[in-house]
Length: 89
Image (cartoon, rainbow, N blue to C red):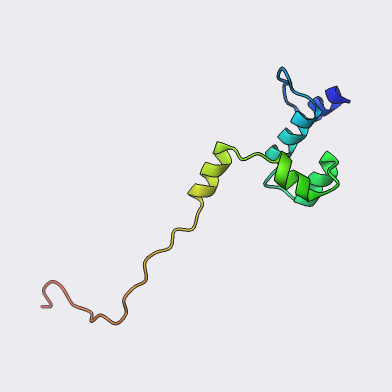
């Protein structure tokens, strides 16, 4: 069964990897997808286990989230008078 899971994940097994290592990899690789589908695919009974134990934060995801953060622009002061600059004619 371990070999089948390895093939489905298309990953190379590292020394010391076992069943739970593959489940963690699955959870981490698919953290942007549907949690319900991930639980079905990985055999988790509860999404709580995925979120608290198996999904791992990785630097690439953290950088992507940080780069996509909404950067608000400062509000425009509409109470200040408009001053014309340059030559009017």
